Image (cartoon, rainbow, N blue to C red; front, side, top):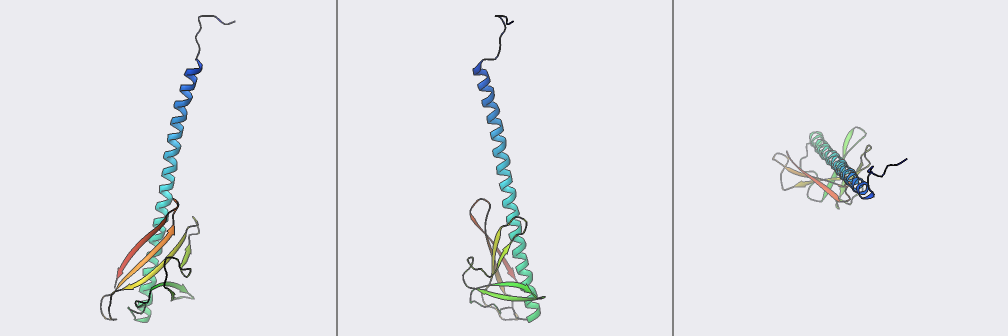
Length: 152
């Protein structure tokens, strides 16, 4: 039996409580989602830095093996790859849309395109500058680029 002087929650109070709870959960979800996107974007950028560093190492190995610092010349972008235990050059005059140096990240599935270009003029005895460009489609839907300069 219900007494007339007992008070319960009105529908308005319940709706306000649900609204506050929904707002708190929605804010938490948005924060976690943004945080996850930032983490993935940082992982992609880190992977791009590793790929650019790898290109520099391949370039250094190529120079050490051949003794030619300016072999890649001003004819456009090149890509260094390791094939059968030695470093080879792949030509590409149209980065970042080339298909010669596509590197797919096995963990996250991002597709990176890398190209290296000789900048300036030098002979084999002087200091030379190189430019490494890595591009990829990021998790936020934009195309990202990472540039690395190397001098030797």
